[in-house]
Image 1 (cartoon, rainbow, N blue to C red):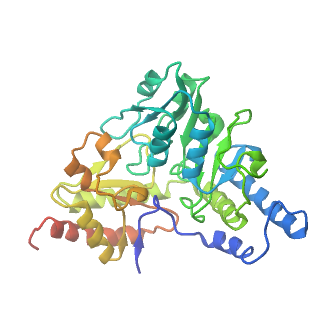
Image 2 (cartoon, one colour):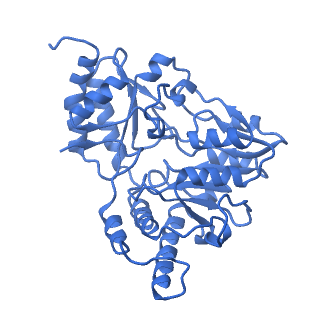
Length: 368
């Protein structure tokens, strides 16, 4: 039995979401059609929209379904216009940073050595030329949670976008309390299917659609809705909202305490206290290559990652760890263990049984 600790890359599909999706597999389901089949599809889409809205405290009318958080980030940053600067922390996901560079003048804001975004630094970077401030609610590599509400309150009058793909379902998310105008979500981080996400667009905010050619999603995103995937997203959103708890916190604490006791020199990347994702542990083992550990763990039946799955295969070290001030060697040695709805205490214990020996092997140490 394999142990899967890469929920921040993608969570296993929840059985309830799969079952709901199977009901639409092979069934005509165009939500724009006027016949009975179309009405059934429309009803399912709107029920899912209500569940996704409830996950973040929004109105269903403020939810735009997309193909994922990457498209949601693109719609937010491109749809807000092409003039002016975009202010963003240096640890944002590539779909934010690369899109911002492509459509405007990106003004990067540094983070502290623990990967925390400092509100005053972001606010200081905002001026009359700024059209969007984009601050991810939680970083998926090191687990730091950003002071988005504080930033939004300080820059009122400027559009504020937050990529919440890694936060939703793991920590409470309420768009009203955050004060954001735009917020991106992803289904597959919650245990829904890949290929579907959403953008919250606060009532009154106007975006220029990136996909045109149809009236779908109230004219904000053309194209026939992916009913099958949207239904799965809705179920996953409901279950994730019901499950936000301290369960993964206890498992991560157990994992970290075990590693500290069993592996000499282990270092935790990211915040060790305060606001952080309850499911994420990023660690490095000086003297052991992260790439080597990834392979050894995979051969031992344990799936982890080096950081963002979107950067997998890149020869470059993590841009997040580099932004935290680590040198390139240190930034190459980090591995991320991310837990979720399917993780058990037995999974954690299996990692603690195996990983110390693999670290010693990667370090070239002789067995005792």
